[in-house]
Length: 133
Image 1 (tube, rainbow, N blue to C red):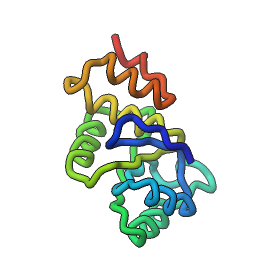
Image 2: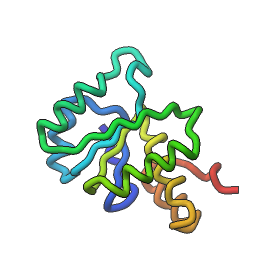
Image 3: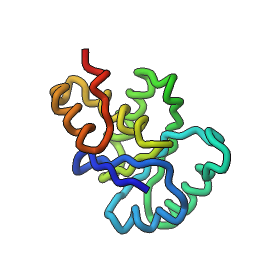
Image 4: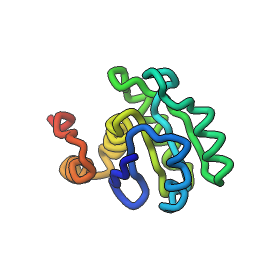
């Protein structure tokens, strides 16, 4: 499990397992957001199983499945609504962390300067420079 921190409120990761949930809680996260559809890959942990364990550990859990190649502004708006209303800090994951990172970046357009967004995502290990024209 990766802990790629974008800011104090938002960290992204690759796919987690139920064994990672205790660590996520110990790190102080309050909410987990999953951006993976179930059965995206063979042997991928089931979202309902992760959700159940997360909630048993006192964590909020949101499943917002997004297909990376089909990510659109409705997905960004949905993410923004979730992010604004959930308890922070938020731990979000997908297959590699890229979808979770991209959703955060696009939701901050107009709030942060593009250079700041690219710097934050780059420090977290994600190259989103292609989003700036």
